[in-house]
Structures are given as structure tokens and as C-alpha cells.
Image (cartoon, rainbow, N blue to C red; front, side, top):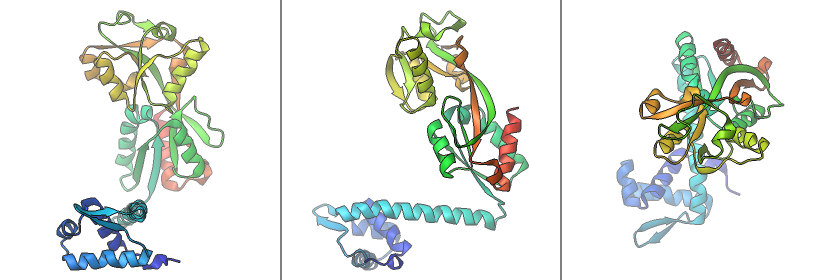
Length: 300
């Protein structure tokens, strides 16, 4: 059985460099090591795992199946070590806590930049790690303890978390200026279903909201193309590939300046609530509780 204590971080770094460059000489030049020293590192690593990590081919070195597997694990190990070093460096310079926040795209685009900037201005020694995720993934991360605070849409089940109202937003239909709907100031969702849509990818709470609303009308959303961001939706609409539904606050002024029109949806479900969630408020560390209180106050 392989002894984990026999691995060292420098050898893993060198192994990844050889895997990236595909040759010992190139890796030696990049790492400022002699070719013999680098070769010995790789040979020692292969002895540790008791199998070959590279095959010699005409153009250099090629990873074996074991080598491919080790690439995955080595990257994971080194990423964890780098994060650990970063966290410890924060404490060394006086940072008094680290808060992890996962939030859906609507919150990240519309509200969090200003709210987090205001919080850090008052609490400069707290570090915030923000990740943009799908609402359902945010809730799952709260339940598992992977994140401290989450922000998610109101149509995503969240039975095992404590939640608080954060912000409200309104959905609009974005259309080209020459589109048949462009002259209207407000439109029902049913009227839009005659047209092709540009939508977010599967798993998005916004796409689920549109799909559910269309199903309630015994209709379907005619998705012509799906993309991963609001900005990409805007660009596709500019190119004439369809219309789209976005939060009003996510429609940038320059998009409207480019000739697109944002039309309010008249349906009641087009007014949404974004929720703040935590696994338990009582279980939060002091720095996370401070951020939660700040975000709750910002949305009130």
C-alpha cells in the first residue's frame, strides 16, 4: 500500500509541469532545474506510486492512465494547499474572518456589488469569498455547510435552511427595437410565447419560472438558443436570434442604447423575491453574522 507521507508538494508541482509541457527538457527550463534533477524527481514519484506515469513517444512524453489520474489528484491537492496558504496569510496580516457566499446570477449582477462594497468599507478586515451559482446549488451548499450564506430565487425549494427576504426585482422582456412587441410598454407572458426565445441554460431558476408559466398556459417556451449569462442573452438578442426575459436591474444602459427595448411583464409572477439563506443563524460565526445582518438591512 502506498504511504501518503511519501508524496511531497514540489514533486507534484514538477509532475504537473511535465504533464503540461509534454517533455522533460521544457519542464526543466521552465522550473529552472537541471534536467537530471527533474528526471530524478519524476523517477522517484513513479517509484512512490509503483507505476509508470509517462510513456516516451516521438514528440516527447505522454501520460499513462495512471498519469492522467494523478494529474486530477495533484491539481486538487495543490489547489487546497494554495487556498490554505492564502487563508493563513490573511490571518497573518490581520484579517479577522472569512465568509463564504454563494449567490445566483440575479443577485450577483444587480445587488451584491454595492452591498458587499459597503460592508467591506465598514469591515475591512473581513474577507468575503463570493461564488456565482445556480439557485438550487446554492441551497444544496447551505444544507451541506459548503457555504455560510446563500442567495437564491423564490421558486427554489429550501426546506432545510433558514431564509430571510433580501431583495425584490421585476422581470422584463428584452426585444430588438424593430420587433412587433417593441411598441408596447407592458406585455403579458402569453403574448411573448408566439416568438423565439434566447434563454439561460438548464438548471436556471429563471428558466424554470418561464417553463412553469408557459406550462400553466398549456404552451411551451420556444427556446432557439441557450446561453450561460445575462450578458450573452443580450448579445444574442442584439444579433436577432430571439427575445429574452431578464431582471430589470440586469439590463445595462448600454444595452438599451444599442437599440434594444425592455418591456415590463404584466404577470404577477414576474415580481420576484430573492432570499438570503443560512443553515442556521445561531450557528454562524461572528463575521458571517455581521454580513448576514448587513445584507438583511440593505434589502429592507
